[in-house]
Length: 104
Length: 104
Image (tube, rainbow over all chains, first blue to last red; front, side, top):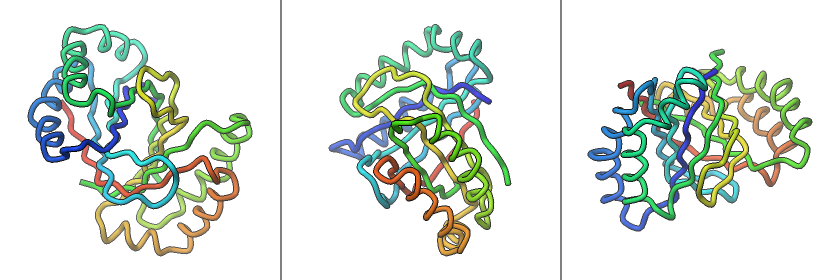
């Protein structure tokens, strides 16, 4: 089980500008966070049912709680956090999750 | 890039019963869907900011669009879908996503 920072983004007004900033500026900042194991970007291409309509859900995974806490306290995470507020304020929800992957 | 079925669940009234059904009944049904590569369950343990407060976000990954489409048309997927409606109607939102994982 990994401990993850999850970000759920609502649909931006200018998705082209949002996507470019996310790819060119934000992803490099996230990849610099110490202890990050993986960054998974899930871009919603079709809504099937239900009231929640996220534009994109991102999972940033760390090995365990200790690695997660150290990462959150890092300057690199603070820089990524400041960047989020510059392009996604009002669109983003942030959560901590415990994540488990099962293979059939 | 994989093609995923994503499910976002809102907080159930009886989280104990929900979690037990999800673990004991729903996960085995999902694992039976042909072509499934992985099932990742992200359980939210702490809300940090923003308006969206999911209880759990699940990503069911398939190798590509063809595998995804075949899986969605399968009897096993229909059984999993019927089960979702039996325990999570009104709580679940379902989406298709394109998912990409980057490692630092």
